[in-house]
Image (cartoon, rainbow, N blue to C red; front, side, top):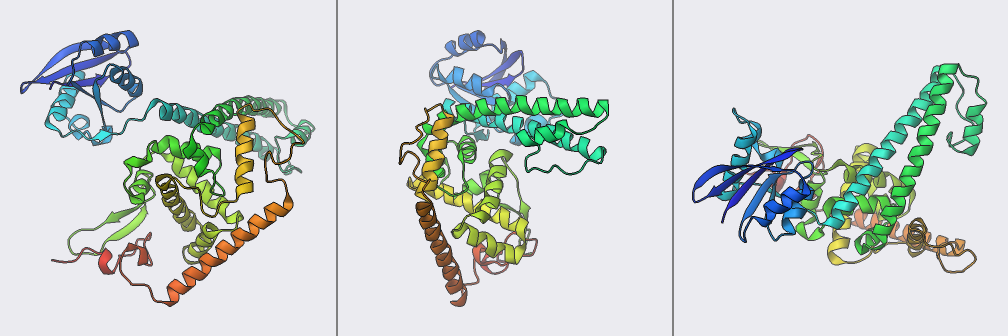
Length: 421
């Protein structure tokens, strides 16, 4: 087996080969499709190529894998032999990758398939556009604050009624130019986000896992799509705890010797987009009756709303893991609400409207909506009774789940603490 190390740059890739116990440099390959295809065709079966996870790595991986070459993408955060080296050049970095690969000391990261990569690009771009739109709106509100204007008399200052109110304001010329420019930016970004929403909707309708996650109240297509784009294949997480750690929702732990373990804030490892989405859903579940709202309120009474939102986001992660691994919909789903979500998704994807046809959405009836809401209230009450009975029966004081200060900086007690030998 020959091990190849690729140090990827914008214009070229430095190549090193490890073969027969020796490592040598093999020149450079242009970072272009044609050159990389020729490089892949020059390899033979059994060759392995290693490169860092950087910009353009996904495209290089797909080109090499299309020619039957095994590719190992290294975790750049764990390559201290490269980042902390005294002598750091492109040639030395490529040799280091080849040496670590042939010795089996390279930490490999999972490479998603093309469908997951495409969804990642769509959701990431949408998040950036939403942030840019928020900045434009905040700048417009700053104009109103600087000129001591009253608060907008409407809920949405950027809707039709709000635009008419903004047009009547008496502002200096420079401030009027700033405000009008912000409004044009908001209009442009709205159109761009709408185009992305349409494409994401088409991808979600062809992805059963995304539709399954949408059965959870409070989880919309953006949350489900961002979650699936981040994790890809759920089978690579053998337990929900692994998924929680991957999304950075697990608490930091500090322990040494015989001292008790101290648990701090969440690690915030991995991609931030799914973690932020789950945090938003945690606040949404407060508005919908069900076990999740009861859990949020139980933690909020003891630890406050911010900790409760983080704990609920973690609870949602565990719930979504079970739904995907068992291939089951949410047990306390509201079918009419779910059908409305799917119907809105179809309309976003370009499906024709069918006004007047009964049963096309299924959630327009107030009687059906109230009946499902009552069932959710009963499920919430059952969860509260379960917690009350569990507390009155005296749960064992062992394990992290029974520790009162699990997410705090207080030391753990019982079996959660490493025992002195």
